[in-house]
Amino acid sequence: MTGRRFTQVDVFTDTPLLGNPLAVVHDAHGLSDAQMQAFARWTNLSETTFLLPTTDPAADYRLRIFTPGGELPFAGHPTLGTCHVWLEAGGVPRTAGEVVQQCGVGLVRIRRDGVRNAFAAPALRRRDVAEAELVPVLAALSLTRAQVQATQWLDNGPTWLGLLLDSADTVLALAPNHAALKCLAKVGVIGPHAVGSEWAFEVRAFAAPIGIPEDPVTGSLNASLAQWLMASGIAPESYVAAQGTRMARAGCVHIAREGDTVWVGGSSVSCVRGELAL
Image (tube, rainbow, N blue to C red; front, side):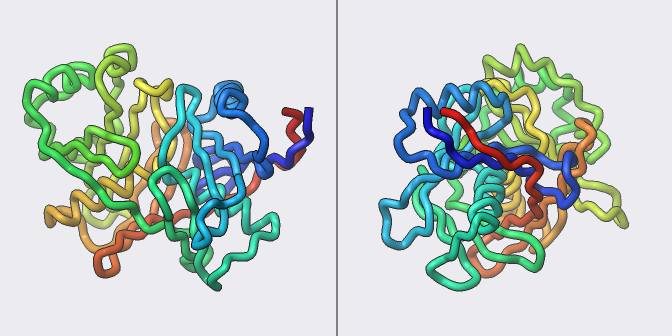
């Protein structure tokens, strides 16, 4: 077995234990797909990432992202968390102020946004949701049709069924039937907070089909929700969303659109450093 550097980092928070944990293997060259998947299953975190030498001269590093149930082409909190770990370990980007990550969706730009890192949301593919698709999901969430303001299939690597609900309170009150959702879809819900709140929206992510009943804080989902709702004139050009509240977390997701690019930002903090025997 080979000793490999390992860091566990908390993402979308600057306070340990209040965000979404991520396992990062620094030197993953030589690991097989089966070994990566086995380790991701063992950590039992929503995602585990593996840093590899880039195969694209424009990239600073290459990343593979695994859930306990399979590999993802892109995910947001692994992108921000791994960038934090790479920089902390002495990584130097080719271009000052911007890191370029190579992953399954191609090249993803990450920039320093004050004390946070922020990634440029990948291109979003959207399609309408048929009522027949929606009915079993609403039943699994114990929602009425009147509580749902808008729906959309969202795909920026991961695919989510996006639901805009009538309020943050409705989002927070959800008690999903995860067994039922496992046979349906990954569902992302968002609802507005009252005017004057420090948060614009409350978000929750239910990913039972990939073995994650509820994800604490989800960058890819927040990216696609922002792109959808901004394009629909529902969300402002910049806002802060809360996620993880029902899981005793305090995830903080900063969203801003500049031109055609939506930036998704958050803080990260390293919690565990060591060596992995794998």
